Amino acid sequence: MNVATMQSHSVSIIGTGSYLPQKVLTNFDLAKMVDTSDEWITTRTGIKERHIAAENESASDMAVKAAVKAIKNAGIEASAIDMIVVGTVTPDMIFPNTACFVQKQIGAVNAFCFDVEAACSGFLYSMEIGRRFIETGAVKTALIIGTEKLSIITDWTDRTTCVLFGDGAGAVILGKSRSSKGIRGSIMGSDGNLVDLLKVPGGGSRYPSSAKTIEEKMHCIKMNGKEVFKHAVRCMCDAGIQVMKKCGCSVRDIKCIIPHQANMRIIQAIGERLEVSMDKFYLNLERVGNISSASIPVALDEAVQAGRIRKGDNLLLISFGGGFTWGAMLIEWGI
Image 1 (cartoon, rainbow, N blue to C red):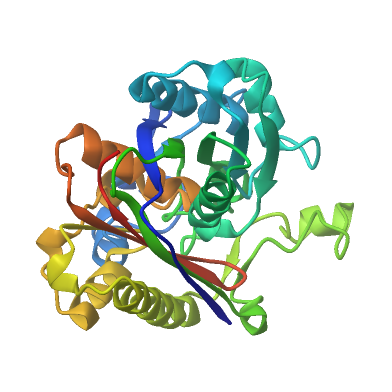
Image 2 (tube, one colour):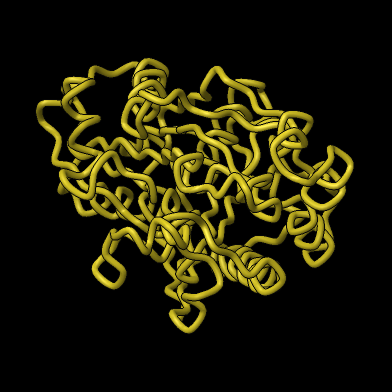
């Protein structure tokens, strides 16, 4: 099912921030851990290295570092934030929600807080929620974060998955636009028939933690790579096309595309289907790998800091994740 939305340009991104852990795990490092090689990983994924959080570094710790940068770049105080939404599949705890841990550490005393679990689509889902709260007038300022410590749910003996994932966090501040620029439209979709394609089965109410779930590595990411590839390309392309159509523009009007950085082959297939040059994509996959809900906000912040995105540019964000979930958002950059 798809849900399409389009409103006036009333909500903008007024600040961005990101954080990547200090430790870098290269393909050559992985080759010492599992039966793989730099050539094998690079050819199949486009990834050369990924960042790994410290043992005592939680999802909220990384989120806070990204949030502090976004708050500074937005030129606001933490007390001005009315809501915090965190997209994550690796929360600090089952509860309280990770957003509350963030609130405490940054001093956002006036915010209400909750998490969104939509896997790699979590950031775009969270963005849409924050946007709607601002549009209704319920809040003025929202902090939206994607943060992941995927290293804790990665099976480091499975060469088909452990080469893909990394850790990190990205954040944006949303506020009311002062002009016609801002979020132009979005598409959100899900297909529960595909729940088994990408999952972490253990630890919930269906398969509570036990000696058996640990022994069978049910707390690690399980993925049907071939099927995920097929549906990811289809869903992201369709969502991107639909949101452009809803906003009355074409891919020629898009200055920069920031996709979920999951696999270079997926991104290349999207480029072919959309009939756009790879130069139009902002990519950091080679350096950071797949960081799930943090993927798009980290890339977005990097693109902004590098001057890749300028006022008036049309920006397309597209993502997919386990569930199966997907989303696309079209933004005219500016406040």
